[in-house]
Length: 407
Image 1 (cartoon, helix red, strand yellow):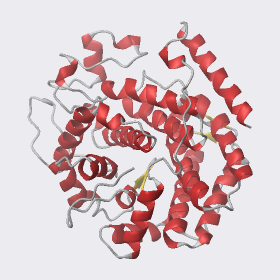
Image 2 (cartoon, rainbow, N blue to C red):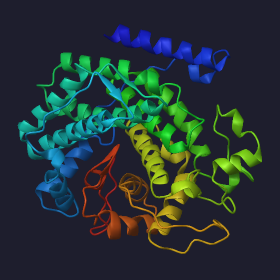
Image 3 (cartoon, rainbow, N blue to C red):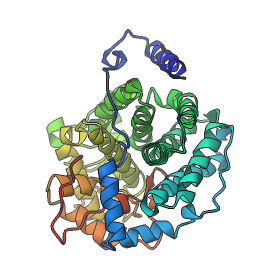
């Protein structure tokens, strides 16, 4: 099985080189040896234990957020997976796959937090059903890439918890699951997609990082790191970048200032914290892109790579500007002469606040207020595509004082 994965990845690298028409560059370098920590995606084992202890103690906000998860449709004990051999990303298949991935993660969390192995068995059954069935994703317009990004980032969340805490999910089960990720996800994700808007490629990158860890696959993990480091500075602007934003690597059509202005949806001016998609849809696409870049950084952090630190000023400026806008803070007309329309809320913010405020001790007042006043108070469960239960797994309480959680 491991040999098959290595051959697949070698083939993907050779294909990428051929498509670019060039020789081997830094992104094709042999991945360094790496020992992965498990669970090591959005939470370490120590962090999961802290969350479980706080739930059992009835501490807030963990108790309320746990009750929201336990009362959701994804936590029902009778959940039955509906795997597809081929997922048409432009059909109901995509929603079915995303629901099953979210249910697998939800049931794995429920099993760990409650000790009821019914949930863990359900999570394992979902993963096993899909790994025995799914062969590929398809669509008529490359939509399969982003669906593979969303689902390829959530299935491994369940797998990591089961691997560390549910021995009945066997090595053979894990091998079949790894093979599914390699055949149905990695080939779609490997090259990224620098020509599309940033939320699209960042979802793909996040999935690569998840799969790299889940499969103990250094090549895929390093690929995700390289793509993250290329894309994030081309998604979030700082004035230190120069008078115009950085160009996405691999997007030659964006060579001129006029082209880059159109790609950034013609803001009145570039300012610290502006996102490439703010002028397009700062509610939906900005929050999706921010969530996936932060989740990727959180995964890397648990594996000893500080992507957060490499882009701290960039990420925190974007968090504070957009959180302020979502809170109704005035946005200067010079930024967006055509107007700045209030947007919907997505569960994007908890992991970033947990790191920059909880671990680093930075203030981030707009982000904290947005979480307390709006996100944590949403009547609907805090899930969206590849975001699930982050207000539970990454809650931060400022009373008593913030605890710094060591990885």
